[in-house]
Image (tube, rainbow, N blue to C red; front, side):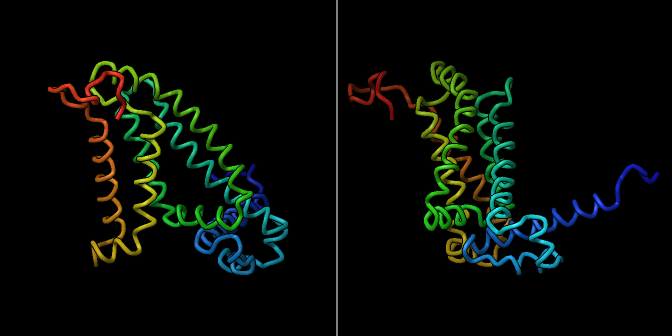
Length: 230
């Protein structure tokens, strides 16, 4: 039954705003802040240029809203996966890394966009560093105790959790940064999604192997010291 409490004007405004945000996200990720024109966003969203400015006032405000939405969705997904208390450490780790990769699969231009934007506008990096620092703190607090417990039991290798997450995220991001060349050279004619999903499984395999416990020491080398960290 039709909901008489829904205001048609409010619904139309919401639809227009979302259309502008979706178009702006595509344009900013593909062209960066400097290369994006608000006229192109308006055209892609199916609204007038004047209407775009009515909703978001300036290009800078629209950019900030788009960037905040992107980061917020990524934060929510990762924290939810990594903080799933009650699940084994490796299950939480792999689920978080899988969600990170699949998010990039939906936003393949994001790694290149971030590198280019922070090179051109380094002042924006400080705010993002602070924001991701808070998220990283939540993730580390949730995973650290479980990782240390499993390392003490000898089921996984002992290593720095920050280094492990950096390695995993770098593998995921590089899959998309390298795709224009690597995909052409290594998998010509392969569907892009199939190529990336294969890289995801390879990345997870690399991380699993990195966490395999070291074999028992059979000599007196320095690496056999219990205090030695690889």
